[in-house]
Amino acid sequence: MGREALIFPYFCAMERSAVAEKLVEIVRPYVPEAELLTQLDEGSDFLKDLKINSAHMIDVVLDVEEAFDIEISDEAAESLQTVGQAIDLILSQAGASSGH
Amino acid sequence: MSQRIVVTGMGVVAPNAIGCSDFDQALRTGRSGVRPDSRLVDMGFACQISAVPPIQEDLLQAEFDPLTRRFLTSSGLVYGLLAAREAWRMAGLPFPEVGQAPWADAGTQFGTGLSGVEPLREAIYKVDEGKVRKLGSRVVEQTMASGISAWLCGMFGLGNQCSTNSSACATGTESIILAAERIRQGKAKVMLAGSCDSEGPYVWGGFDSMRVLVRQANGHPEEASAPLSARAAGFVPGAGAGALVLESLEHAQSRGATILGEYLGGAINSGGQLQGGTMTASNSEAVVRAMQMALQDAQITGDKVNAINGHLTATMGDPKEVKNWQKALNIAQGSFPFINSTKSMIGHCLGAAGSIEAVACLLQLRGGYIHPSLNAMPLHPDIADILPEKAIPQTAVEVPNLKIIAKSGFGFGDVNAVLLLRKWEEKR
Image (cartoon, rainbow over all chains, first blue to last red; front, side, top):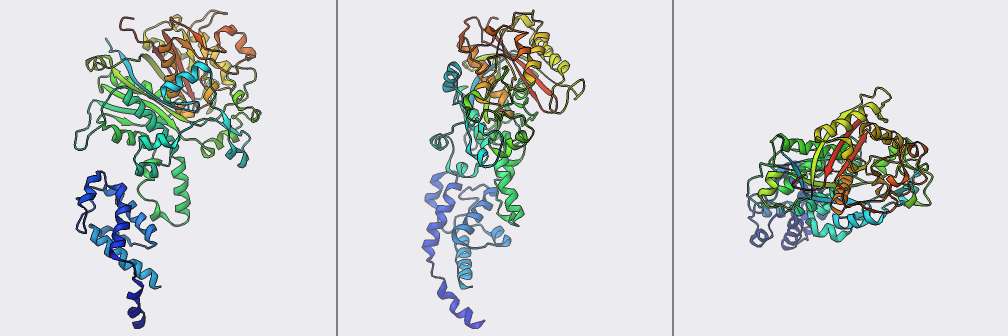
């Protein structure tokens, strides 16, 4: 178990910037006004800043799961507010799934 | 003094044409929208032909954003939204801006028989596989019966009643009557009426099993839909949507709208599945009553009806309907107004039939013609006993003094809807 925890970080090969780029493409169609995306940063709030319909956040999460081949728990999905949090979650989950 | 109700916008997604301008051409030339359907062959249907609107990808790209295109998997909703957008635009009405208040005087009464079958099928598979969490947000809004009116409410920012009606194959005709009556009651000024239905084997399978679809004409699709004929042997399954913008005359004139036609009146009733009426057959006494109630509502007598656009599906209901019209309009033997069946070109579009065919009526009133009723000859003997062949045009007939068309729609459950449309003339 200790050994697994040690080698685990080496499987997190995915770059943060690559994840961010892929995430923006997933989110893009859900953002009602294209110009909102120009001000996007890691602090952007999906609902307040990007004005994504709250009912559609469930679709964003499903799209992220499919694109990154990960599973996001309901608790994690519900606490997801910002782009940065989503990147953290994707990186941790991608690492976890490739570590198995 | 009840206020006059006028039509200021029309839209259509039909198996033989998309949009009113091409639909007008299709009606004048008797263009059939019935084609072979390889899915029905592969699935072992007895009826292997259908009438499906030829929607092109570029139209969807022009009308819907990428997300809507991806998630809108119900063909019925796609047809309904396309027809409604054409009608809304033709009426010159505004699309809502972000942050604006809803339009309190405008609503919709848009019907459907079964419009969410595709997403429902996908959802059932996922639920059965234990993947309920993968359904996402787009199942309920498409599979709920009121999916179409919910979508239209948001698309046009409507603030009045937004409802979906459903009465089987009377749905489309009924929606127009319900919408008009709401305006008459003074509860709305503008109502978007219409109806839509999905296409495909999951909608049509039950009808195939009931042997009400034509099964002897797979080799010659364009001759398969034969309402009024001795050869009538069942209906061709179809799909699509029709939409009308109805408005109080006062409201239409105050905004300078182009008026396309007038709604004179209508009636909705049922036969109680008594006196020969059943789940699937009409009680003729109730049908006659509906026709007479519609005349009364329109404040006209039967002799004022220049043409009838019948329900006429190419089943054993056709001779009964013709007989009922004769009785209700009090028509003398041998004389008969023009009568035609739009279904001879577009098959039976089920819940969408009444609204598509109402658009056909308005186009004929505007253009002063009666469209051909394809494949009607030789006439069914019981119909030939009632009316002369010339009452059923085989090619389009110019009728410059065409003023009033009666439109009927009957549905499973023994339900009826009849309405009267008039060419627009301010002084009638």
